[in-house]
Amino acid sequence: MKRVFTILAITGLLLFGAAPKAIAQDAAETEQVADAAASKTFHQELKTRFIEGGPFFMGIVLVALILGLAIAIERIIYLNMATTNTKKLVNKVDEALQSGGVEAAKEVCRNTKGPVASIFYQGLDRMDEGVDAAEKAVVGYGGVQMGLLEKNISWLSLFIALAPMLGFMGTVIGMIDAFDSIQAAGDISPTVVAGGIKVALLTTVFGLVVAIILQIFYNYIISKVDSIVNNMEDASISLVDLLVRHKK
Image (tube, rainbow, N blue to C red; front, side):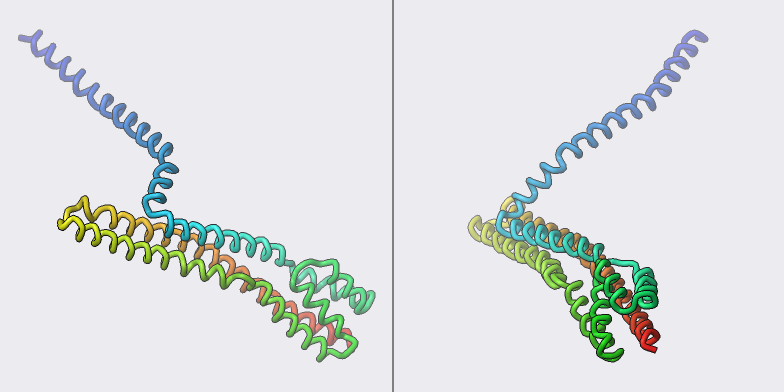
């Protein structure tokens, strides 16, 4: 009897000791297979869903995404190039006015990129007509530069609004197709309705995804424009103060 209990005890230990290891190994292998399958089929799944959504509306949504991204990237590059260190520029202009006068300050502005330097140049160019004329030139040309900063942003907002609208239109058309299928079959079965509803949901999802992506870029661009405009206004006030001091 002792030998039987000993054998049972050893068997129980082996079973209960090995089972968790086997379960853990199986779970790890299953997770690895699932991860591998997901990584391999993501692009294929995306392509399949895109085709299932219908070439017409999905193609228009894709075009809206491409055009919106092109405008967003162009604006981001332009705004980054338009960003200047306004305090450093004001100090350089101040030093040039003290050492070489208006012409030296204009040369500093010519050699500096960005809208702030262009505004400074316009103000300095009207300095011979008086401080008031220079201030009007700064204000007027500041509006021109602001328009250049905001160029094509309205198109980006159009694509943000257009993408989900196209998705919803695809949804409506998909639902119409589903009801046409029900009418033709004379039966409300899941297989009859599933195709139209799938198209409806896919177009909506892709439209919303495109709108979300473009909205993120739009908010970044707007914040960048606001930052540059604020720097332009502060720098313009500083320039007018410099011109008043130089005129005295």
